[in-house]
Length: 157
Image (tube, rainbow, N blue to C red):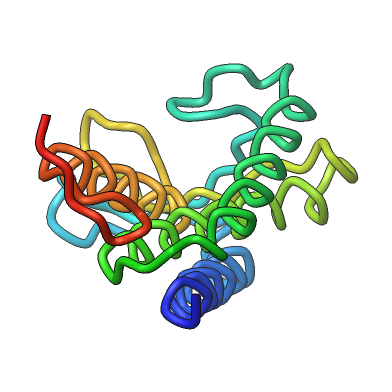
């Protein structure tokens, strides 16, 4: 459990600090090219989900994020696998990071837009919380394919 919450806290802190810097220094300014036009920093506010879809369903995404957080915290008591702790910590930290935006950013509680700023060419703009969620999800899929359960047992189908 300690690893899960440490990873979640680290992800959340990195996400929060990066968004504070982006809002203070990049929002309402020209994007910054990092690698030509292939990778840039560009501040946007996203009320929806991935790729900006579902902007009218911000409240639903907020409830889903809260449910994910609740499930991970409940599962933490039965967690005896370090890789699972890392994966779930990444999911938890990312979910809390984006939930914080939904709760505390404008236009209001449960309707806040998530701050996104990492903009690869020909792809959606995202943030560190999104990255942690995706990486945690990929790790969970890999652990599942290897037969490793959250309780530390290994099964072969």
